[in-house]
View 1 (cartoon, rainbow, N blue to C red):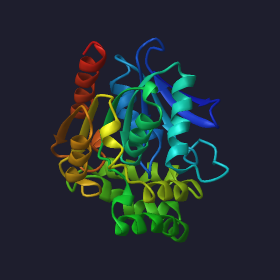
View 2: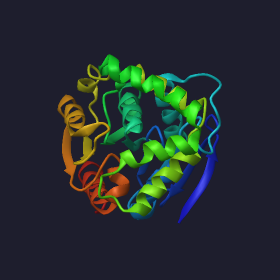
View 3: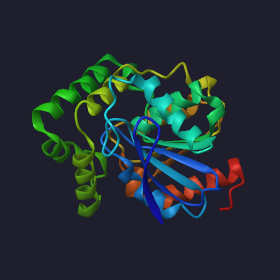
View 4: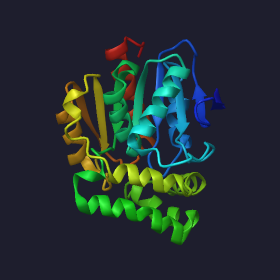
Amino acid sequence: MTAAATVAVAGVHTREAGDPDAPLLLCLHGIGSSSAAFTPQLDGLADQVRIVAWDAPGYADSADPAHAPGLDGYADTAAALIRAHGGPAHVLGVSWGGVIALRLATRHPDLVASLIVADSSRGSGTHPEKAEAMRGRAHQLAGQGPEAFAAARGPRLVSAGAPPELVARVVATMAASIRGPGYGYAAASMAEADLTDDLPAITAPALVLCGEQDTVTGTDESQAIAGGLTTSVYVTLSGAGHLSNQERPEAFNAWVRAHLHVVARVPA
């Protein structure tokens, strides 16, 4: 059963499932989403771990931050959430959430038992054009509004063959989750980030996954993450776009189960 809670950590709202005594899995969503993106994991992994999926500061049911947190601020808030749940945690980050997870592992290595990084990147700061485009997202949202912005961007996040009901769910989740200033703060944190030099210092064992048809961050970027980490396994998920955890949930969850079985001896 999934429960919702507002944790006493800077007004962070979470969805939670699983045995409170089981190993902790913290889920960090992408820049256009919320805890709702992890419904397939909340439903599919709760028999194995205690899952906590956040609404990032400024998203969905979480409070707006008083100022731009920056990537370090998001990582530190995630660290506080892990401590509040008695951590350490296995940390699953999708897209922007993966960038936060990687920074979390560098700033608070004692709190990160392992990493699962899906369809992510080293940050948009690796290329000036990417950084500029990311900063422009906030202006697009302000000009179009959440519904029109989500309708234009949401379908790009899944493969061309994704079922219409998944596309509709992705668009609806985005429209209900994003707002200013939170989205702008998140975009700024991505535009400033280049974690290339941070990766070799991360010692937590990592599973890096990417949808074969991810046209947003792409398999090359996920492979760059995996190659830069000390200990990693890289997996390409066929038939999936950028939101592989939602488009191929059974396969995605199976890889997460296998990873947790190896690194934490959690029963598969």
